Image (cartoon, rainbow, N blue to C red):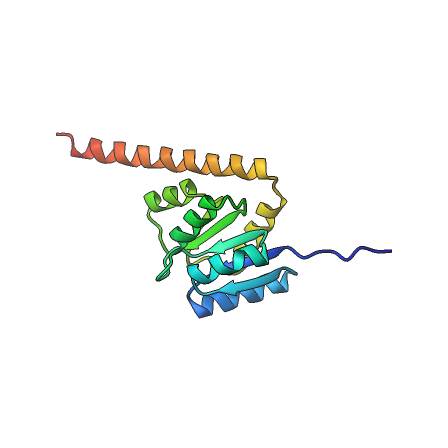
Length: 158
């Protein structure tokens, strides 16, 4: 008897209806099971029941933000990998995203096919590999910020 291949479950948390619709279309086109919500509160309510294998998360939402969702995931010890897709491009914010639990951080605008491919890669990694990737990203961001701050300090020296 053949086993039916199980689809990877993706939760998309995005408040922009156009972006949400496009992401859902691309993930479904690539054989993912997708559920989408428009805010952090909806996400917190659906995560325990839906049990996604990956979360695509926007950070800037109201009243419950993506930052709040990351904190909730951490507090409730969910080990779900999170791929942040946000318009927040500041390196400090990206570092903060990794420190709060994101495994990957992509800035908008990004091609939906690139997001799908990155999600595929993350889903192939073990928990240990994702943790190592997260720590690598944190170290990279800190090094970049360190060099930027040093360069700014050099420019201010007379």
